[in-house]
Length: 380
Image (cartoon, rainbow, N blue to C red; front, side, top):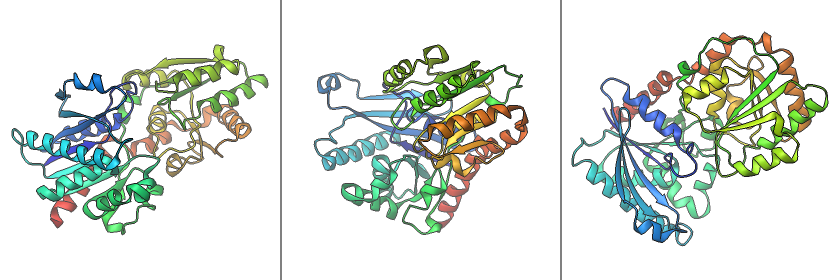
């Protein structure tokens, strides 16, 4: 089976975490016998640097471990005209597709990541060249694609693709019958994180995240400051990741007088994250909304409990045996939950935590994807 993945995002520029799960999904698919997978990516360059764009290399091929990424660049005119920008995106995608099939077999399935613009463009391509399309939605803002100026694009996708979402709460909001949609969660290579755990002295909190809006890392600082003020002194927070709001969160940390308790260590590889998780005993999620939250699965796979806000995605797999769920924005409750989990840290069953994570292993999720592909192809 030949699968062509078309993401809206691919790790590049300042935010190296954006779209990293698309890479991991392709790699996992590529590890399956008799599956050939490649990726087409239309790289939208910001209009604020048009001169720089003129001198950029417009096409390139990145050879990943077991698949290739075929990239074409375009100037993003979305702020000037969404219609013009979308037409250009579709045109660029079709051009790179036609170049691709000159040296590769026609795909059996196109799997687009995000409804717009990649899902829409993939559906235009699929309809024209008679290729079934699966679209997986990841974004917190997915509902906008069925309203206002996006509505025509979202409806086109609904009419021309099989829709999957990474969480059930998202799926319930997709206006399709159940035989045309299903949940396809993000996958995690859980085996990387299953290291022998040693007893850790003190409260050691780790948070792996892109430093963007909605992550509310400063709420974690505020909650831990409450614990420190209540005489829990042996505490440290490690922040893994980078992003546009890195300076903002560092400034907030400084304002709260937490510099001695927090380390920002930047982006790390999965192998490095596994080692870091093994030196901590809790992860804390403070987001206002998460559609899935891969770092929680990584933490569970490593054998540590989780404190999380009720931010939708994690609510679908976290239970009282995994840690604590608290109302978003309640700093006092967050601090209390962290203390309760810490006081009972030795009572959490590592095997159970890892069994929850394993629901989202590479094998389980790619098996789900293959089942969807085969069902679609059988109907074709």
